Amino acid sequence: MMDNTSQHNFIMHHHMELSTLTVYSENSTNNTGAREQNSTTCSLRIPQELFLTLGLISLVENILVVLAIIKNRNLHSPMYYFICCLAVSDMLVSVANVVETIVMLLTEHGLLVVTPEMLRHLDNVIDIMNCSSVVSSLSFLCTIAADRYITIFYALRYHSIMTTQRAVTIIAMVWLTSITASILFIVYHSHTAVIVCLVTFFCITLVFTAVLYMHMFILAHVHSRRIMAIYKSRRQGTSMKGAITLTILLGVFILCWGPFFLHLILILTCPTTPFCTCFFSYFNLFLILIICNSLIDPLIYAYRSQELRKTLKELLFCSCVTFRCDSILECLFPWKFT
Image 1: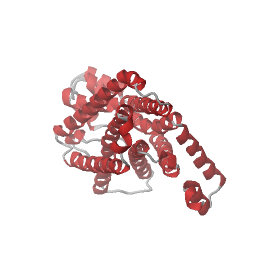
Image 2: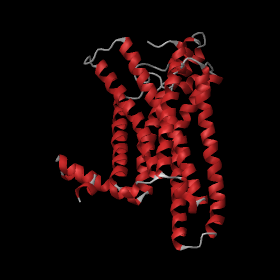
Image 3: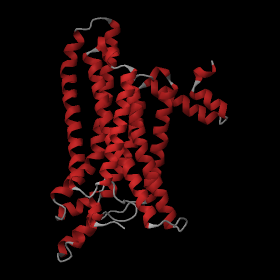
Image 4: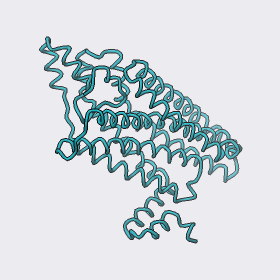
């Protein structure tokens, strides 16, 4: 179903079969008993039901975040627009995971028959969604970092610099670039340059964000002394709180996506050594971590933002109290009914 060159694909058939990298490594070391034993010891199987459960929870959480930002007009600001897009990026991972897992479960139980051609097209679509998610997530993390940087160091000019129109333009450019890059990555997935580009982009965005944070946290205290008015001091505190929130988001992103990018690096550096063969066999675990990132992000939003947390509670209360269409619309868009 997958040839050896498919090892360069962004997201492999993690539910259909073992990683091509693992199979390739095992086949190339059949004459070495120690390596075979190492590969067997390192193998890891994760139930598809776990993928499905985590994917559904993550999907519901991120949908609630998007609805909460739409519902609460106090959250209609550039930073929350970017956070909303970050939630949509996480939703792409969740949707791709849920769809693929359902197809695999139905196929295993004989409830769905798919041809290799259909499976290949489905895999390409899922890979594009996953690739778009990682590229857009990194882009929006950088965008939020730049937004917080402007808020802290150009507080008096923030609203003239980061207008709603500019925020929408940035969002459109990020999504267009992410989707285009993802399609190109999948079309040319057999080329080593694709992996190099992904890893390079990952490193550049981390360095860019780290430089902004170093500047923000080192000079924020000095800069805050220059703003003496009470309102502006409060604004400064709010901006730093947003920067801290983004620091947490970035840290979780690195922890959850880091093993996957290390996986890509090892594909280039040591595809057949025993250590790498063992590392490749844990690919499904890396996918679980990626899904967990989409699951954890909404919890961070809610924990760090009292306004968003309050709106999420209202949404949950509305969904529990009534299922009438007009009441749900009134819950989501209360200003339409005043």
